[in-house]
Length: 280
Image (cartoon, rainbow, N blue to C red):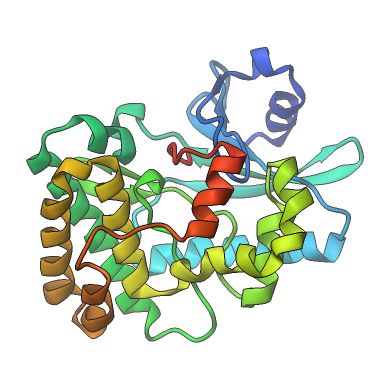
């Protein structure tokens, strides 16, 4: 179990003494890993607090349920805990997660390794996607999954997923749309987002669609390595036919050409400076 006193101390510490910031470009937070101490083998993700105690309690319940659901759906994950830390009288949500080797993160590996190796990683990630959705098909209630390239590591041929926030379970579409604004780490998004709530809400739709999550994975690969786009499209078409046949018609329709991000989300990303770095 996490030493909560040490966790609180680290979060309160000056940024220079916290340790290494793993990513500065996340939508919800900038995770960091302590350089030393009992939590040096963990990545710490601190999210925005909110004044609604009941909503925070629900958030914890949903996060716990979501981690349990991902594991039940056969999604390999590092050890993950959810805690609240008191900062200036506010309860702040914190996710503490077992750190993965930096050289295992899928996105940078996809950028630098040979095509054959990247196709093996795509297969590993695809197997996780297919396995989860085949399990989720028999579950009740609304549940989603955000298996983008930046949310995976690949270790010894196995794709490991590490993005559990926001918890894509139990919340309605409208509620999740509001969460995308409430917990955004980008002040600009919180200011302008309510003016475009309908479009912000639409960001999540891919996460709740089995074929679109696979198409999204292929789209990310095509954008990372446009010269190899045809190889990724061919892999995607073959994969959905043999592993996700239940959704193959819809997925194949999205894999005739390199998939593109919706225009409004591309605009949001440019506005917020989000470049798709690993969301560790």
